[in-house]
Length: 129
Image (tube, rainbow, N blue to C red; front, side, top):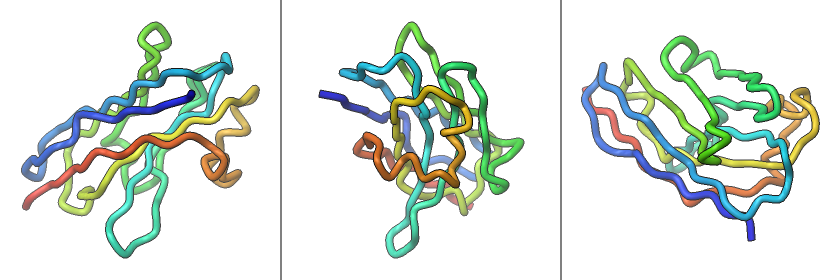
């Protein structure tokens, strides 16, 4: 059974850094769309960053571009999100998602591939001013 487990969340002051991890297990595809998303209570989920594991193509939301970096370690089957220069508005529950895919083009957030993907349980990030 496919499973994603996130970790690495915590509380930091503005300007600080965190690295989130998402360990994948039980997947049978060779290549995936994987991504990080975040959500606050009462707000819509928003995508943060996505990556195509077949070629490491990445996309970032404008709100995090230049501060966050998504990467995937194939050997460890782990997705990472390095978050630098954190702001209070980055406070949210962060989730990772994955779905098997044969093309980087499939991973565009506009395709909403994650609606049919596997999700982790989330890890909380809190940034204080």
